[in-house]
Length: 307
Image 1: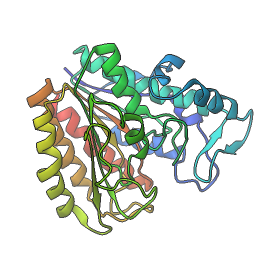
Image 2: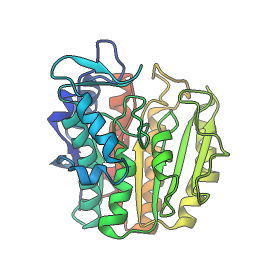
Image 3: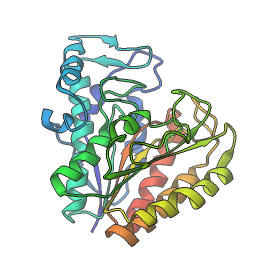
């Protein structure tokens, strides 16, 4: 049994303006650090419309497709841009996440990491946000429910920014348990503990700036891990953002590279107890290229070590 790596060169064709933090080089920084690891490397397939429509309405999909420029870049908002290859890249990101779920659920691999871009956890039902076009992880969760009949999917988002898009897309979803740990205050300004979802299934863990590793580990040990165990999920999905790292320029939670290994190993232990190790992780943020690569390698090495 193995760890799968889903990626695709199309994700390099989603181009943002010079100086934009969500740049093409991010994917290269991750993939170069994964060289030499024992991974089952697979091409992320293109998501068909029906997959995207599990979370987004047709009108939104049509608007995103129509917004793609023939050349150059276009700004959809102050943060989110598109180029001529963006729709194809975004379809690979969604398709890779769903294909990883299928591979894990079929028992073809133990777990999987999806190294694609653009990221997804800020995309709301009808609104692109924060570098994100489609809700990759939320769509993967819905796909697991629809295609695999799952009724208990746990989603853990450790990106430094609140996963407002995933929260929005799964707000009325009784079959998903969602956790987001994130710096607060920080953009996008959502993610208060009082935001609990339609069924009390949303759990936000705001962390103060400069709170560091010890505060994070206590929060996960006392709140996140016990609740996931009690939930007894059939699958664990991870929004793996690496921008809480102490070197990241966009925030200041000051986590270490080792913290990502620690979180991953604990989630894998829970997955082994509850769902035969089934875990799928999808790349979200991380904007210092060196720290991003090193943290992603620590995360994926933990995945490989469990398989």
